[in-house]
Image 1 (tube, rainbow, N blue to C red):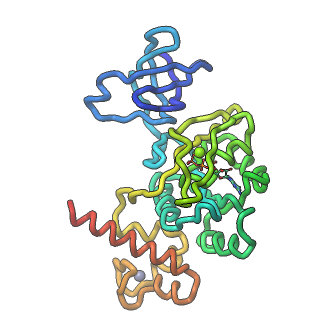
Image 2: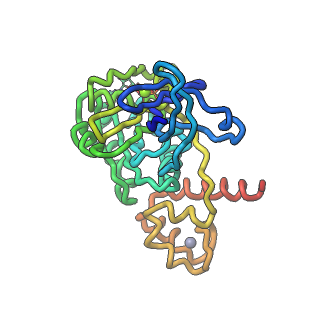
Amino acid sequence: MLQGIVVRAYSGFYYVKADNEIWECRLRGKFRLTGQNVLAGDRVKVRETGKGTGVIEEVLPRATVLDRPPVANVDQVIITFACADPDPQTELLDRMLIQAEAAGLVPVICFNKMDLVDEKTVAELTGSYRNAGYTVLVTSAVHGIGVEDLRRRLKGLITVFAGPSGSGKSSLLNAIHPDFRLKTGKVSEKIGRGRHTTRYAELLELEPGSLVVDSPGFSSLYLPEIDKRHLAYMFPEFLPYLDNCKFNGCLHRAEPGCAVKCGVEEGTISRERYAHYLMFLEELIARERRY
Ligand SMILES: Nc1nc2c(ncn2[C@@H]2O[C@H](COP(=O)(O)OP(=O)(O)OP(=O)(O)O)[C@@H](O)[C@H]2O)c(=O)[nH]1
Ligand SMILES: [Mg+2]
Ligand SMILES: [Zn+2]
C-alpha cells in the first residue's frame, strides 16, 4: 500500500500526494460507518485501484487537528487579519487564539494590509496582543513588507494560514512564493467583506520540508470543548494574576478580590480582551447547562 498525505479534500474526493504523484482517492466504505472524517494534512494509507486513482484505507494518528479551517497535522497557524478592508474582528481573532492553544499549537498573529492604515492604528491593533505575549507580524502582501520575515518562519514546518475572507491569506502566499499563483478576490465594497475566493484547504510545497496550507476564510467559530475553569489560562496575559485571586476557583467575573480584574483596572490587561473572556466564559457555561 502507498502512504501519503492528503493535499486537498473536496466533495468526496481526496487528493493524496504519495511517491511524488497525486492520487485521486475515494474513501473506503468503513469511514462512513465510523463517521471518521479525512482532512487535508492527514497522513493516509492508499490502495491503488487504477492509473492515478486509489482508495484511502487508513488514516494515521493525527499530531494536531483544527476545526476551522479543517486541517490535520499542521505545526503552526498564522492567524491572518487585515488591518482594514475588512476591519479586523478581534472577537474572532481571540476565538482563533483559543482554538490554536486548545489544539496544542503556538499561534502567530499576522496583521496584513498595513499599507491601508497609519502607524497609530497598527500600534493599537498590535499592542494588546504583543503585551499578552503573542508573536505579532505586520505585513503588506501588496508592497512585500514583512514577507521575508514571514517566509523565514515557515522553514521546516507545516503552516496553515487561517482567517477571515479577504484578509489576504492567498495574497501573502503568492508574495512568499509567486509560483503558487493562488486566486485572490477583491473585498466587496458594498458589504465590506471578502468573497470567499479560496474554496478548500490545500497543502502546497514551499520547498522540501516546508509546507503551507491556504484555506477558505470564515467569519464565525465555536469555542473548542474546554472546561470553563481552564479558559483564563488560555489568555496568557492573565497568567501572572491567576494565583492571586482571593477565592479558589475564581472565575474572574464579579468575585471580590479578583486579581485579574485588578489587572484590567491597572491597564495591564486590555479591556477588550477581558470583555471577550467574559463573553466566552458565558458561552462555555451555557454549553455546560445544555448537557
Ligand atoms: N492594500 C492591500 N490589499 C491587499 C493586501 N493583501 C491582499 N490584498 C487584497 O485583498 C483582497 C483579498 O485578498 P485575498 O488574498 O484573496 O484574501 P484571502 O484571505 O485569501 O480571502 P479568501 O480566499 O476569500 O478567504 C485582494 O483584492 C488583494 O489584492 C495588502 O497587503 N494590502
Ligand atoms: Mg484565499
Ligand atoms: Zn479572579
